[in-house]
Image 1: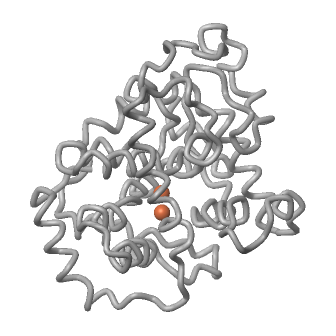
Image 2: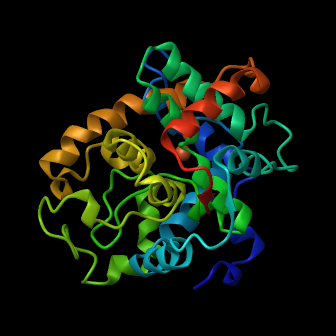
Length: 290
Ligand SMILES: [Fe+2]
Ligand SMILES: [Fe+2]
């Protein structure tokens, strides 16, 4: 199956990919804000599009789909550009159909990174905040929204009912396939997440892009930041080894910066650019292949 086989509605169920993250905030509100129960009954016109988004995500993210996407995208043969250029490329991802977006992609990344910097974390952590969503350039290659953003989860074994909208996995063919529908599926107990194929999206794509250049905790944060079924719900500990479990402290440390750093005051890009250019130069190669 390739991206061209999907209809327009199937490619773009959301008005903009930010709707997924807006919905995450309702599901995982900051401590002192809304209780989880409120989310379930939340009257929000965006909820139907998010539901439809997850219906498609859960139906089409099969083990085979993921292997195909890995083959298609992990050759990095589409573009080569400096990291800052890739950020600007990502920032061309604007959606006219959603007049409500106040902050573009680059601003979300800068706010995440600046919040990490303000808390005095190491510079590679700040850089992680700055690049963590760069993999969303997949959208600019015509990929379906549900194969770029959304919560990620392991494929090749039983889908946990801790994943958002678990009922939609009934339409996923792997759910009826005995190779894939047992607790461990194609994996073995505590085999380690590196052995596990995650549903395809911007996390794994960016991880593969930068895996030779960033410290290991940064790589965990990048690779698993949308894996809410584990870092929030702990539904897949049986696939993790002890090292994964240790490293997930970093994934959990990162998550609040991703979710709760949005502020209505947009960062001034020109003021911040020199600092981030230096950080990029310290850790990443001159150009990066997409
Ligand atoms: Fe992300
Ligand atoms: Fe993000």
